[in-house]
Structure formats: structure tokens, C-alpha cells
Image (tube, rainbow, N blue to C red; front, top):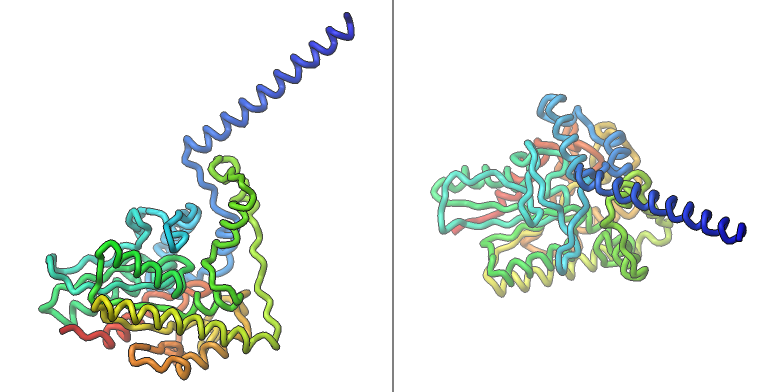
Length: 364
């Protein structure tokens, strides 16, 4: 009997401990959810300590720091699922950064309201989205301003379809999705180079989050919706392995990057011609090619490598296309900073890139 009583006491003790532990876990998760707590990912904090360059801004330092705090908050919100293209930025609203429900960045408002806009859609990655700068200082926002000055009698509407990590494969799919929804622009502008070179140098034509999604599907278990799990992942994020390229693999990588990029452009051209869309492909500048490194806050960067020079020096000869605008060396002679962090442009750079693009566009 004494042994039986001991077992009962131990069982009651275990039940109470287990119940209280579960209750504490539930309450902790409810508190995190109730506070809307989204702890900033440690990688974002490390990035913010390492790369942003306050001296590269046109605006005053306090305003630049205020912007960067908003950007850290936005980047702490998980990317959202989007069919075909895999992911997109979340909806976000603050003083300097605003996106719509589909995650697309707010662009400078057009001067004239009209039912018959000349619609110019700009596709690209985070440099097109405008990481590092405010809504009115993105490349598409400067294009809105410049085109209205160039064509004062036209009603112009420029839209920013840039999304973090997007490259030409995702831009092709995004364009198709817009056309399916009968949202067809007059001009389509594709700003690429950085993400195509970085992404395709892995010899895989896959969006950035493919491995994470594959691992989650293969495991069959998803606890990421639990607030405490999100909190822990933010504090102890999964490390993304650095890309290591051997010298003997460089030419194979260069060939793969350029051939995939060219195939995407050929398909985009065919679709645009089918739907009467004018188009231009812009090869963007990067700090790894013909830029004075003393102006950059931190070199070398982990994604830098021998393939960048070869891709960038070969792309102009590779792309025999009258609709191809090569801006790779646009800042080669610039005597000053044009990057507000590792790869994203300041206001001056965005305005200059926008002016070059607008000069290549012709409205009837």
C-alpha cells in the first residue's frame, strides 16, 4: 500500500509540474503574440552594425538613423508567400517606408490623375525596391519625377515592382502574373545584375528561399507559427553557408550566369512583344566592379569573388540587344560615396540611374 501511495504521489507531482510547465509556455506565447512581438533577427542586427554608412546619405545623420531603425523593423517581419515567385515583402507602413498589401513599395505620387496613364513598371531586387532610402528616393520615384519633366503633357504612372532578392527568373514570373490579371504596362523596365550574378553563381536557378521551403516540406512539421519559436529563431538564426568559389570553377559559373540571364531576357522579350509592351533591360552597377573601394565602408564583402569581374566585363559583349542598357561602370569616375550599405544605392545614385533609364524611354 505504501508503495502504491508513493506512486500516486509521484504521479500527482508529475501531472502538476507538467500542467504548470505547459501553462507557463502557453501564457508566454500568448504574451508574445499579444504584444505583437517580432524580435529583430540577430543577422539584421549584425548587418546594421556592420554595413550602413551614414556618411553616404544626402539627408542629415539623425534622419538617416531614424530611417534605418524603420528598415530593421520591416526586415524583422517574415517574408510572405506568393504563388509562382515564392515570396514577397510584407505590407508595412512607417514614415519613410510604405508597401501595399502585395508588398510593393510606394512610389512618388503622379502630378496628374488620369484614366489614361502611360504606365511604366519597374522590376528588380532590393536595389529597385529601395533598401537604404525613403519612398521618394527610390529609382522608380525619381523616374516618376524625371518623366513628368520630360513629358509635361503626358500623364505618367511609374510603379515599383522591386522585391528583395528577386532576379530575372522571378521577374519573368511576376510579369506573367500581372498580365494574367490584365495589368499590362506600356513600358517594362528590368534592373538586374546584382542578384542574377549572386544567385546564379550557385549553379542553381532557384529563388533565395528554396532550401528553407524544401526542408520544411520534407520534415512535414512546421512550428514557425508559434511566437516562442519565432523569438528563438530570431535570437539564434540558422547560418547561411558562405559561397566558396574555386578559381578553376569561375568560367563555368560565368557561362551559367550569362546563359540563364540571356534566356530569361529572351522569354521576357517574347511576352512583351506579344502583348505590345515596350521594354528595356538595365544591367546595374555593383561595388565589386569599377568602383573606388576606399569610398565603400567595408571591403571585401562575403559575396565578392573572381566571378563578379568576369561576369560584368563579359555581359555587354554577350548581350547583343538594342534594348539592353549597360550601367555597370556608371560610377567608375564618381568621386564620392554612392552606397549606403554593402550594395544598396544612396539618393544621388538612384537619381543618376533613373535619369539614364528615362533617357532611353520614348513615349509616343
